[in-house]
Length: 240
Ligand SMILES: [Zn+2]
Image 1 (cartoon, rainbow, N blue to C red):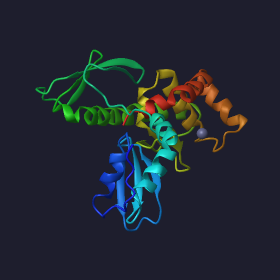
Image 2: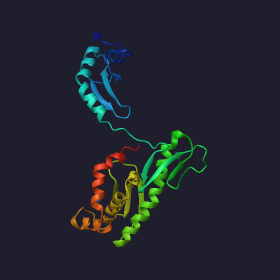
Image 3: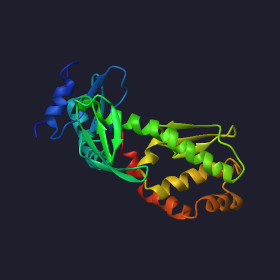
Image 4: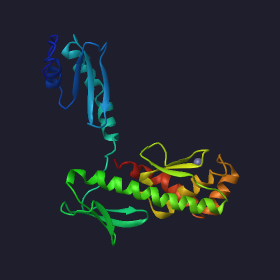
């Protein structure tokens, strides 16, 4: 490997560094960068090197090579994100549905005999399916939450469908419940557990013994649902 010892000129420094490396890397030469730093851009699946303006090429190359193992380990750890695709079969509110994309359809997105028909351009297929699930989730989760709440003498004010990846659901003191739309992709017993969990918070704002007794009374299979989320929840988060 040829090592250039010369100080790189402003614009060709990134290219000179890249030429010395045997894997792709994004190099940002910045007058503001005080020192060499490496990070991983998980969206682009690339290591990113920030280089001070007058950094010798050899110094930068040695720095990257020193951290090569960390770079490859980190790249491997980035999970693949998932989008809905034509002919894909997945679980929607506990029933298996298959996507059928047909650009000529006029009706947007609709479900008929376990076939989810999607019209429009292919590029928008994922977004249309996701929006459809969110809309359905709002109605289905609201009805189910209200039904369970009545059993424990409570009332749900509103249900909001969220995109956050940090939690599956939450319940406010104002009797509003939030659910992640991705829970719609889980098996039915998991959905039932989560709704029983959030509804029980209308009565118990903690995770005390009384709270769990309430969840169990509403959904006897709650332990199974909880375990499933722990083991498989990450798979649902892969959906963009
Ligand atoms: Zn909780």
